[in-house]
Image (tube, rainbow, N blue to C red; front, side, top):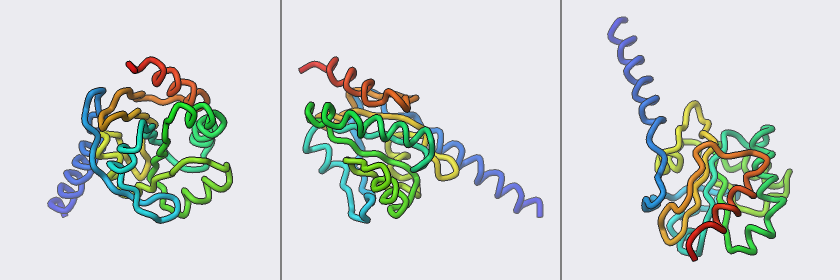
Length: 170
């Protein structure tokens, strides 16, 4: 009984430590990770990054108030973001089916990545507990993190990203 309890406690503490990795810092090479999108198709992040500047934003759960505000901020300023050549990947612990419903309900024009095991979150050092990623964002250019926001806004997210992009060296 005592041994089983200790094993459970040690396992739980291990999960906490894994979930609290350091987020990728500016200048860090981005990880080579593959996950499913809202359509169940594989998304190879390395291939997406090769196509241009990419915002990778993590959010806790699809179709919840804060996450909806954040996604709609990006949707509403989509013409500005895409006009600057910024691709967007939204990542949460939801399954593809939930991501698809979220995309359709709010007419989101960007890819949503399903990360139920937290492997994309772990690769970026985003805390992931109980299936929920912490709200964080990373702007990736030429295979490296060029900006990060470790406590991303919900209502002004797009404006924050555009401001960071515009401040990057050209």
